Image (cartoon, rainbow, N blue to C red; front, side):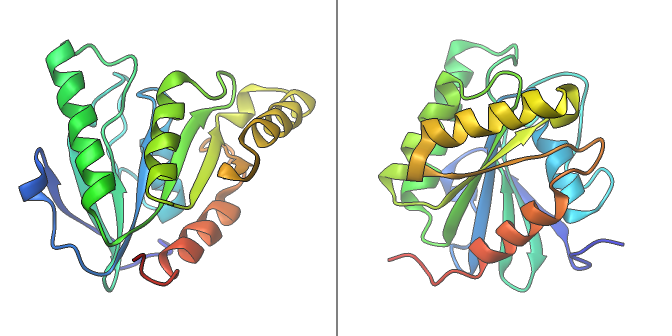
Length: 198
Protein backbone atom coordinates (compact mmCIF):
# COMPACT_ATOMS: atom_id res chain seq x y z
CA UNK A 1 0.00 0.00 0.00
CA UNK A 2 1.21 3.52 -0.79
CA UNK A 3 2.50 5.64 2.07
CA UNK A 4 0.73 8.52 0.33
CA UNK A 5 -2.77 7.24 -0.55
CA UNK A 6 -3.79 10.64 -1.91
CA UNK A 7 -0.75 10.85 -4.22
CA UNK A 8 -1.66 11.88 -7.75
CA UNK A 9 -0.26 13.50 -10.89
CA UNK A 10 -1.22 17.18 -11.15
CA UNK A 11 0.34 18.52 -14.37
CA UNK A 12 3.49 18.95 -16.47
CA UNK A 13 5.04 22.32 -17.22
CA UNK A 14 7.29 23.41 -20.06
CA UNK A 15 7.60 27.04 -18.93
CA UNK A 16 7.32 28.95 -15.63
CA UNK A 17 3.81 30.29 -16.23
CA UNK A 18 2.60 26.66 -16.38
CA UNK A 19 3.86 25.85 -12.86
CA UNK A 20 1.16 25.04 -10.28
CA UNK A 21 0.15 27.75 -7.78
CA UNK A 22 3.09 28.54 -5.50
CA UNK A 23 1.53 27.58 -2.16
CA UNK A 24 2.10 24.77 0.35
CA UNK A 25 5.40 22.89 0.27
CA UNK A 26 7.22 20.81 -2.33
CA UNK A 27 10.42 18.81 -2.73
CA UNK A 28 12.11 18.54 -6.13
CA UNK A 29 13.77 15.37 -7.43
CA UNK A 30 16.60 15.87 -9.91
CA UNK A 31 19.22 13.61 -11.40
CA UNK A 32 21.10 12.44 -14.42
CA UNK A 33 18.93 10.78 -17.05
CA UNK A 34 20.01 7.23 -16.18
CA UNK A 35 20.47 7.58 -12.41
CA UNK A 36 17.17 5.88 -11.54
CA UNK A 37 15.12 8.94 -10.55
CA UNK A 38 11.68 7.64 -11.59
CA UNK A 39 12.33 4.26 -9.91
CA UNK A 40 13.39 6.02 -6.69
CA UNK A 41 10.22 8.15 -6.70
CA UNK A 42 8.05 5.03 -7.26
CA UNK A 43 9.67 3.21 -4.32
CA UNK A 44 9.45 6.18 -1.93
CA UNK A 45 5.79 6.82 -2.78
CA UNK A 46 5.31 3.01 -2.91
CA UNK A 47 3.36 3.11 -6.16
CA UNK A 48 4.27 1.20 -9.32
CA UNK A 49 4.61 3.44 -12.37
CA UNK A 50 3.73 6.56 -10.34
CA UNK A 51 6.58 8.31 -12.13
CA UNK A 52 7.13 6.74 -15.54
CA UNK A 53 10.25 4.61 -15.88
CA UNK A 54 11.84 3.95 -19.23
CA UNK A 55 14.72 2.02 -20.76
CA UNK A 56 15.46 5.20 -22.73
CA UNK A 57 17.28 7.81 -20.61
CA UNK A 58 15.93 11.34 -20.62
CA UNK A 59 12.20 10.64 -20.96
CA UNK A 60 11.36 13.20 -18.26
CA UNK A 61 11.57 16.39 -20.33
CA UNK A 62 9.09 18.55 -18.43
CA UNK A 63 8.68 19.71 -14.84
CA UNK A 64 6.14 17.21 -13.47
CA UNK A 65 4.05 18.14 -10.43
CA UNK A 66 2.63 15.39 -8.18
CA UNK A 67 0.38 15.95 -5.17
CA UNK A 68 1.27 13.85 -2.10
CA UNK A 69 -1.10 14.92 0.67
CA UNK A 70 -2.83 18.22 1.35
CA UNK A 71 -0.68 20.97 -0.13
CA UNK A 72 2.49 18.86 -0.16
CA UNK A 73 3.98 18.07 -3.57
CA UNK A 74 6.79 16.08 -5.15
CA UNK A 75 8.33 17.60 -8.29
CA UNK A 76 10.04 15.45 -10.91
CA UNK A 77 12.53 17.66 -12.75
CA UNK A 78 13.88 16.94 -16.27
CA UNK A 79 16.59 14.29 -16.46
CA UNK A 80 19.89 15.36 -17.94
CA UNK A 81 22.98 13.75 -19.38
CA UNK A 82 22.53 10.82 -21.75
CA UNK A 83 19.29 12.06 -23.30
CA UNK A 84 19.64 12.57 -27.03
CA UNK A 85 18.37 16.11 -27.36
CA UNK A 86 19.54 19.26 -29.10
CA UNK A 87 21.73 21.88 -27.42
CA UNK A 88 18.75 24.24 -27.68
CA UNK A 89 16.60 21.81 -25.68
CA UNK A 90 19.33 21.39 -23.05
CA UNK A 91 19.60 25.18 -22.72
CA UNK A 92 15.81 25.37 -22.32
CA UNK A 93 15.93 22.74 -19.53
CA UNK A 94 18.73 24.64 -17.78
CA UNK A 95 16.83 27.94 -17.93
CA UNK A 96 13.59 26.26 -16.84
CA UNK A 97 15.31 24.74 -13.81
CA UNK A 98 17.02 28.02 -12.92
CA UNK A 99 13.60 29.75 -13.04
CA UNK A 100 12.09 27.00 -10.92
CA UNK A 101 14.78 27.14 -8.22
CA UNK A 102 14.87 30.93 -8.02
CA UNK A 103 11.12 31.61 -8.17
CA UNK A 104 9.40 28.88 -6.09
CA UNK A 105 8.62 30.01 -2.55
CA UNK A 106 7.01 26.64 -1.79
CA UNK A 107 10.19 24.72 -2.70
CA UNK A 108 11.46 23.28 0.59
CA UNK A 109 14.25 20.97 -0.54
CA UNK A 110 15.98 18.93 -3.22
CA UNK A 111 16.52 15.19 -3.57
CA UNK A 112 19.51 14.68 -5.87
CA UNK A 113 19.59 11.23 -7.48
CA UNK A 114 23.13 9.99 -8.16
CA UNK A 115 24.27 6.61 -9.50
CA UNK A 116 26.59 5.33 -6.74
CA UNK A 117 28.96 3.91 -9.37
CA UNK A 118 29.48 7.30 -11.05
CA UNK A 119 29.40 9.50 -7.95
CA UNK A 120 28.96 13.29 -8.29
CA UNK A 121 29.06 14.51 -11.91
CA UNK A 122 29.32 18.03 -13.34
CA UNK A 123 25.52 18.12 -13.69
CA UNK A 124 25.07 17.12 -10.06
CA UNK A 125 27.45 19.92 -9.05
CA UNK A 126 25.32 22.36 -11.07
CA UNK A 127 22.17 21.20 -9.24
CA UNK A 128 23.94 21.49 -5.88
CA UNK A 129 24.97 25.03 -6.83
CA UNK A 130 21.34 25.91 -7.71
CA UNK A 131 20.25 24.60 -4.31
CA UNK A 132 23.05 26.29 -2.37
CA UNK A 133 22.29 29.61 -4.07
CA UNK A 134 18.80 29.63 -2.57
CA UNK A 135 19.77 27.92 0.74
CA UNK A 136 17.82 24.78 -0.10
CA UNK A 137 18.27 21.64 2.06
CA UNK A 138 19.58 18.86 -0.19
CA UNK A 139 19.51 15.09 0.28
CA UNK A 140 21.54 12.85 -2.04
CA UNK A 141 20.28 9.36 -2.89
CA UNK A 142 23.16 7.17 -4.06
CA UNK A 143 21.06 4.82 -6.19
CA UNK A 144 21.83 1.38 -7.61
CA UNK A 145 23.72 0.45 -4.43
CA UNK A 146 22.88 -3.20 -5.22
CA UNK A 147 25.28 -2.98 -8.19
CA UNK A 148 28.28 -2.73 -5.82
CA UNK A 149 29.59 -5.07 -3.13
CA UNK A 150 28.71 -3.92 0.36
CA UNK A 151 32.24 -2.69 1.12
CA UNK A 152 32.48 -0.77 -2.17
CA UNK A 153 29.09 0.86 -1.54
CA UNK A 154 30.11 1.87 2.00
CA UNK A 155 33.34 3.37 0.66
CA UNK A 156 31.47 5.32 -2.05
CA UNK A 157 29.04 6.67 0.57
CA UNK A 158 31.92 7.86 2.77
CA UNK A 159 33.66 9.53 -0.17
CA UNK A 160 30.55 11.45 -1.24
CA UNK A 161 29.81 12.47 2.37
CA UNK A 162 33.38 13.70 2.77
CA UNK A 163 33.33 15.61 -0.54
CA UNK A 164 30.00 17.30 0.11
CA UNK A 165 30.54 18.08 3.79
CA UNK A 166 27.64 20.13 5.14
CA UNK A 167 26.23 20.91 1.65
CA UNK A 168 23.95 17.84 1.67
CA UNK A 169 22.94 14.73 3.58
CA UNK A 170 23.70 11.45 1.77
CA UNK A 171 22.40 7.88 1.86
CA UNK A 172 22.59 4.62 -0.09
CA UNK A 173 19.50 3.56 -2.02
CA UNK A 174 18.38 0.69 -4.23
CA UNK A 175 15.03 0.53 -6.02
CA UNK A 176 15.68 -3.18 -6.67
CA UNK A 177 16.24 -4.28 -3.05
CA UNK A 178 14.42 -1.28 -1.49
CA UNK A 179 17.55 -0.48 0.53
CA UNK A 180 17.20 2.96 2.14
CA UNK A 181 13.46 3.21 1.38
CA UNK A 182 12.37 4.18 4.92
CA UNK A 183 15.30 6.55 5.42
CA UNK A 184 14.46 8.37 2.16
CA UNK A 185 10.75 8.59 2.99
CA UNK A 186 11.51 9.94 6.47
CA UNK A 187 13.79 12.57 4.97
CA UNK A 188 11.16 13.57 2.40
CA UNK A 189 8.52 14.02 5.13
CA UNK A 190 11.00 15.93 7.29
CA UNK A 191 11.81 18.42 4.50
CA UNK A 192 8.16 18.84 3.51
CA UNK A 193 7.38 19.74 7.14
CA UNK A 194 10.01 22.50 7.38
CA UNK A 195 8.78 26.07 7.98
CA UNK A 196 8.24 28.03 4.75
CA UNK A 197 11.38 29.58 3.31
CA UNK A 198 11.58 33.38 3.32
